[in-house]
Image 1 (cartoon, rainbow, N blue to C red):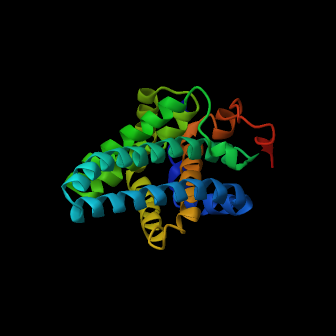
Image 2 (tube, one colour; image 1 turned 90 degrees about the horizontal axis):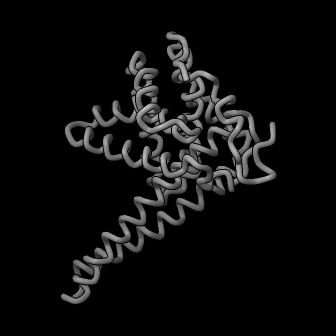
Length: 240
């Protein structure tokens, strides 16, 4: 896949978010259902983690030992759910941006690239977290440079090739893509304050923005990339 001609991103970068929002408004129900499923699960795990830490802090010795064993397991489950959900959401977003009618089941990870997509999400999260340890800005930059690559991985490209393509496409527009990432991060942070309900809107926005960004950064257009994707449902994937 070749990188799109220089100059295109300068014209559309901040429009990615507004276009993603307009796409969401055309098909809000499947996204809200798909987002709510994960948000509820995450809130349940968070509640269990809170109760476990309370048990460690205020229970007896036996309770503290049990809690110390349970807490890492709950954290691992939470971490796995978030990364697997990312693979499903990016698949659903790619279909949506390609002009398909999506259904909640499209957010279920499927296809031969699922493991690679989850692994890419994990590696991106680790790299961004390590970079953020030094300062928030490097973490944002790493995420901005490599996040679009997850769309390519979801469509069958190898992790290393997708990372290289993403870096080559985003590096000339480092400021723009970093600012877009910052805005999305702020929106997610704000939306998560009230019991996570705002995430029902910002989760679709983030992944749709990534798919729109990938459409404009990479060639062939994302619509051609996802044309052969098996959606796993006879009702999804129809043209809108």
